[in-house]
Amino acid sequence: MIRRSVRKRFHTVYWTPPEFDIQAPAIFVPNHHGWFDGYLMFHVVTRLRVPTLDWIQEFDAFPLFAKIGGLPYPLGDPDRRTATVLKTIRLMENEGWSLLLFAEAELHYPPELLEFGKALATVARKVPRVQVIPVAIQYEMALHERPEAFIALGQPVALGDNLITRTRTAVAGLLNETSTRIKKNRNEFQILAKGIPDVNERWDLRRLNGSS
Image (cartoon, rainbow, N blue to C red; front, side, top):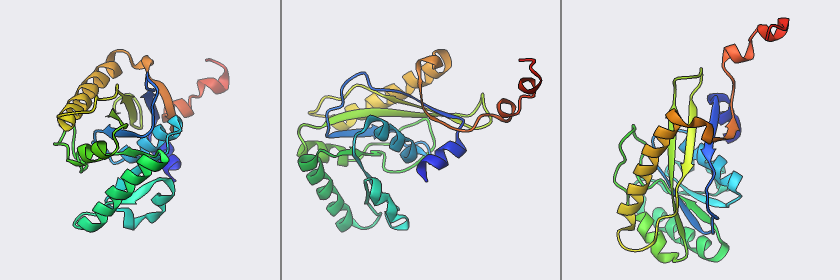
């Protein structure tokens, strides 16, 4: 369902693979500016072959997400949230799972970043060997009939004091860098997932009569 949805809604999804070895467990920390963020990150962690958990506020509406690492994180239910955090820490420590963490906690309009919550520091403190990986997700709707998405993974953020602030700064910087690269050096990105070409790309009659 996830792959089909991305394929139908996008022209192309691009990414910059990490330039370092991901040592699980890791915490992937992307911005949260688009409805498809979780779907796109599924493509990323699948390509990286990193089993990854994801806290989902609306998990009860579609519990099948448990099959790919989804865990319940409902608003207004601190007991279930606490249980999910404890389970996450246990799975990261004992089984090498990683975590997709939308540290802003809510979907919102770009380009600003909301304040990051305390969960990042909590998990990092309990899983001391963890890699904290900033991620930038940028959507572009200009050159094609359907939007394009660009994903970049930054260098791990060092653990220690002010981890939340430093990670937020890293994500913000990566967003700015990605935006510049899209406009100036988009050929540096690799294809992560193909979508549907534009109507003129699909129905170019010049290909039929041999003129191109």
